[in-house]
Amino acid sequence: MTTVAPVGPSSAGTPPAAPVEPSRRGRRGAFSAYWLLLPAGLWLAVFFVAPLIYQASTSVQTGSLEEGYEVTWHFANYWNALETYGPHFLRSFSYAAIATALCLAIGYPLAYMIAFRAGRWRGLLLVMVIAPFFTSFLIRTLAWKTILSDGGPVVSALGALHILDVTSWLGLTGTNRVLATPLAVVCGLTYNFLPFMILPLYSSLERIEPSLHEAARDLYATPATTFRKVTFPLSLPGVVAGTLLTFIPASGDYINAQLLGSPREQMVGNAIQKQFLNVLDYPTAAAMSFILMALILIMVSLYMRKAGTEELV
Amino acid sequence: MPTPLIAPLTATVRWLRRNFVIIIGSLALAYLLLPNLVVMLFSFNKPAGRFNYAWQEFSTEAWTNPCAVADMCGSLGLSLRIAVLATLVATAFGTLAAFALARYRFRGKSATQGLVFLPMAMPEVVMAASLGTLFLNMRVDFGFVTILIAHIMFCLSFVVVAVKARVMSMDPRLEEAARDLYAGPLQTFWRVTLPLAAPGIAAGAMLSFALSFDDFIITQFNAGPATVTFPMFVWGAAQRGVPVQVNVIGTAMFLIAIVIVLAGQIAGSRRQRSR
Image (tube, rainbow over all chains, first blue to last red):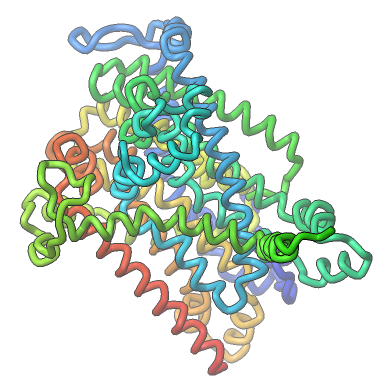
């Protein structure tokens, strides 16, 4: 019935060492995989899966806080949420997409530098990428308030270079301020999720054999061609993993929009948080989280099909 | 006719092209570290009003008296307690699961793997709202326990991933050798398997400590009004005025983390060299 067949690493993946004789491992049958999985599996089933199922039923309830909620299969919750918060969804996904693109543009050179140019500084540079994590997320986001403050050096420089004129024409900033504009929110999102882009990029770049670069050079490829035909294609798994790890949390975030944006730049996360913690309209909050989840799921699966990497996870 | 200006210009352009990656990479690194520098700098500020966003005057007052803001140190203690407990439970449960996933083939394995990975591929606000809704309807009192439950839940996946990667790269011949030398199963586990897996387990534990200590979104939905963790304190302070001491704590955490990671790296490279 239960087929707990022990298996060596050869079937599991990374470097196939000596194959393990099944009989040897089979002796430890009492310690079956199911017992090992029980605590973690139970925890996730009760506190992760059950809440999601419960959330699904909440999303089709009607009622009020005073009279209690009841499942009435009121799918209109979804339509109402979409109608009211459509702009929020649109804003969330476009901010997250821009931030992801910026993360890729900023993170790729850094990951490349650490993987190929850093030499003995590699360890230190990796520490520098991870280190900001340890100063609380919120404190660092608040620091952007200082950096982007009105009349501060950054804003003055952008103004003097007439960059703010362009961005305000595009509707990204005000004519002489960055705080409380879409640009500030995108800047915060890019900053906060950049390490999630760099680390997978680095780990896939690091795995590329240097001899492949030499081979490309021997075949008279220019550095640009080497990058386009060898390095970039081989780093694709990292690109896919990095973009997912930035896009998904960025589209659900509400901290950056709250601290750096204005009420006009609110994202879906802000709306869900408000419905849940202030308005106490749980069905709407539930419906919105399900729409968010479904849209992300659709986008991710389309993207994965397009990117065509199955070796992920 | 070449003007004398062209030569240095082309040299500069050539230099820029050759070092393109390093220049952009260094700029990216500066972008990553800039807020940390600002936090550090402003921990020595003496703000004029409630808000510590503009530089006023140098002062070490906040450093000499970091717990002057009583609520802050209380919330810091709470965050530390939760992070330690969540890390202990998540690391224990996650390590067991990682061994099961790395070492055994069984029915429902891919489904289990999916279940373990799903929490990492979901926006936090969705998990936060659904767990909060469940607690609300089970009429559970929000507080320490609900925060702890939520933190263990989202830390588990990260531990599993870190430990599983390590276990899969371990050479099974070492354990076989131990058995061939008549080590019992327990002896093999304690003397061979566990020491080999230790770096993965340590990485998982560190990750879950950092994630739990810093988590805001899931905590905000599952905390209730009475239990204020450190990130929740900062969030509240962002509206009322952030005390300078918050910058002190942020800077201290940053420096402590760097020291720990560097010490670990130096120890690691020493061990490798002595081998």
